[in-house]
Amino acid sequence: MCSPTENDEFNAMIECAELAGKTVERLRLSRTELGGQELHLEFTDGTAFSLSVEPSTMRSAQLVFQSEGQIETIRNYEE
Image (tube, rainbow, N blue to C red; front, side):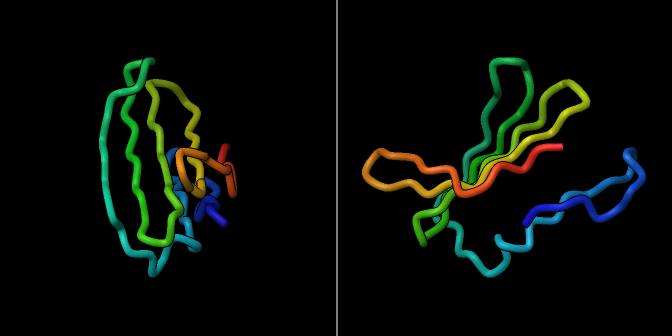
């Protein structure tokens, strides 16, 4: 599970232990509609992870499974 590693909101880091050891098949970086950035990693096991950084105080990320054009959310990581 992705979880903050420190309690200080200014120095908080999110660690996503379930991503360790996965092999990246594709990496994409794009702009979001709100002017932020999105990092999207697709793994060789069919899962994908996306991280959005918006110009605000909220962060969000998702681990999803992609198959034949369908996307199933495995876990949402939101503050």
